[in-house]
Length: 227
Image 1 (spheres, rainbow, N blue to C red):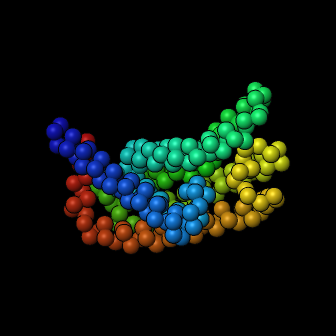
Image 2 (tube, rainbow, N blue to C red):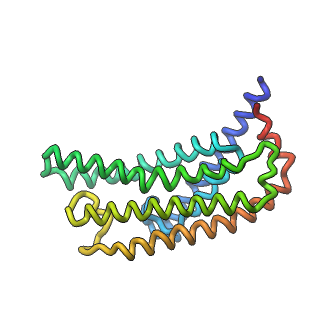
């Protein structure tokens, strides 16, 4: 019992470190290769490799809760900024219908731009095995990245459709787009390219990291002894 508690504590410490690396890499990317673009619309999202690693190394349970924690932190940080814009945009609109539309749009933004793209990273835990045999195979990595890419592309398309619908209505979503016109096709190309490029880079890094992991199987096996 005591050994299990110690093992859980070790996992929590390791997961916390990976989350720290994810936030650190994201912050670095934001002010370098992503040119200060907010995380929910950044082109490069390489930091997700650490979130994917959590499920891959510690199983679906830890992967899910780590992904949920990570996405909620982003939701709070990004929406705290959005609320300032919302207050200014809606200060002269007090109709209940306006507020209902606003709340519905917020919920859809959370689903399409935060929940789905981040929670899908926990899918890597679906291939987890306590004997760590999955570390010796390439298939789990490939399937994981394909699943993540598909879900992220679908959520991006839904988000773009949401923007297009609300842009014509001049709702608060217009703040996403500084130009007076909106291009559905350009946004689709941007989002699709972002997912493919980011996940290709993540796949290459994942392969290199996995080579190192296979050289430390005995150390990693200590984390998989939780009953």
